[in-house]
Length: 333
Image (cartoon, rainbow, N blue to C red; front, top):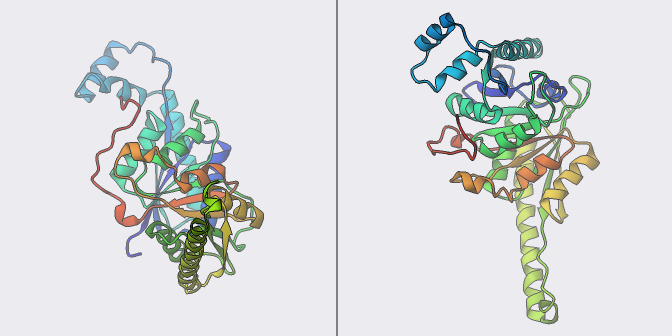
């Protein structure tokens, strides 16, 4: 990586947001990086009537009436509290990552919308969100925010569920491999990071077997064709595992591999929990329009929702900063 990694961190002061900050220490982060901490607060109740002086000052600060509420909210106590939270998170990060360039920023609005808008402008390599938790600055449920960010972001997203571990202890990672360019990007991302000595990776390919219909069971040719297809799929997955294994071993990681049968959405989560993994890495299929993103049928979204450990959904960096126009299903006002 020739450029510094850029990380956008959603922070709301909750226990889950604190755990997400701790989780970064076991995420293979580079020694030098650029981080932006964002605390977003929503103003639910109307502000008190402004004075004549405040009205004149606001009128000079905005170009259209619709901006009046936002500018006024930025002078509110809730906004100041959000800025304080962002600043405190930045202090913690500087302790753990002294060589990082860290900026703290507060804003007012819908958390998902503000985070995605900032990501579109700033173009981070990774967005970090906690899994769930209620905000100290009020009414921000990070569970819904993490799902929204995971759905709409163009870059990789890490849904963090921190674990208490001694610094420098080996990390256990599960990578879902299916032979696709997306899973190859997940393998490449893990291989590019800096992990503690003796860290382990378990590559898991899941063979979702074809089964004949009730009628097909009585037709020998159907059963034979399905068996051959399942065997070909297994051989293809085996080759993909071998290639990924070689790539990761060159990075100094201890690598094991296995093929499981079943539904990938369940098998990856079960394997990670049984092994005590710190994080699951999965690739994300790119979508060309907003509607397709809600189809998520996607293994990545299901794994992120169900896993007990952190989950990083990897999107190829070449897709960051695309020009596609997106409309949210909720109001942007």
